[in-house]
Image (cartoon, rainbow, N blue to C red; front, side, top):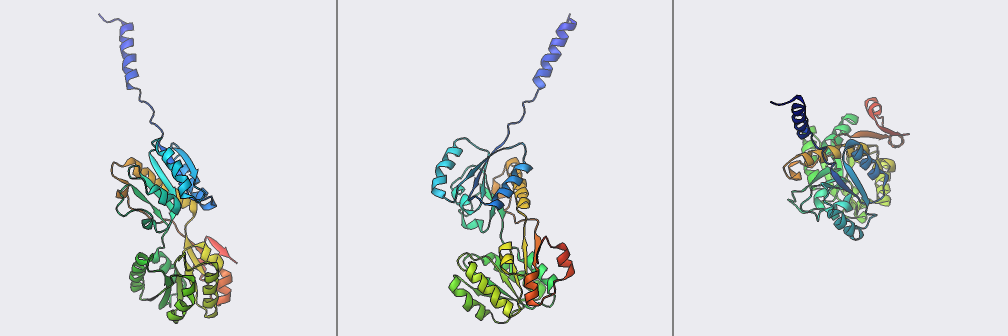
Amino acid sequence: MMTRSSWLVLVACALVGLVVEPARAQKIAVFKSHERAPYDQAIEAIRDAMPDAEFEVLSMEGDVDKARDTYLSVRQESPDALVAVGTLALRLLAEETELPVVYTMLSKAERHHPPGQDNITGVNLDSDPRREFELLDQAMPDVQRIGVLHDPRIHEAELDAARDVADDLGWELVPVEALSSKDVPKALREMGQVDALWLLPIPKALNARSLEYVIVEMTKKRIPVLGDSEQFLSRGALFSLDPEWADVGRQTADLLERVLDSSQPPSFQPAERPANLGVSVNLRAAKLLKFDVPESIRTEARRVIE
């Protein structure tokens, strides 16, 4: 006959067997291309969004070769995932073929890792023609011809998407090539008369000097310039449509969590563009252009240069 004390011992043993070990914290290694404030803002947002994960942030200081030894050392610690912040970090982590790699804070990611590499996905900062053109349509409903400075080697996807959006809006898209800064004056002449100019980032063509030239020439002709970054806005573009870096970080964290929770390769989570974009307006440029910015855009603008 089981005594009361024996029964209590059995119950206690059963309860001990039901105790669940706490889950191991996921280890995330973050490689940062350079020391830049926007990178830090995005990384801080990633960490805040994943408080239970263990993060190790490693600065590459702009040197892929020196960072490779660090990467190999980190790789031996078997992290659960790697995060590439910026272009150089992705170039380094593209060598990884097994661990999940999630990139952020860069454009043209597909140029920096082998096609079909199924352990890589991320958040691209590529231009979004539909949202940018819809902003321009709101500001200038009479637009008919929009010029585009581009490099065909890197902007094929944006141009294809831009043509589709322009067709939807009844616009004529006028793309002109600029492969280097020397090509810019000729490209503007070839473009002819347009109602607005859409600027795409062209590293070899749009440096500080050539961008200033574009803005001055467009201002003379009273042609508004639309860009996809505050860099263009601060140089004299009328509008820009760009994300908050903390928002990009939170979106990256959400994608990273989905990658870690899935049994499928990271590539099954498609690369994303920033979900939240904000309008910035340069009222100084508007004054020079004698352009009246609609009140609806002023009201929703996240940043206004006066």
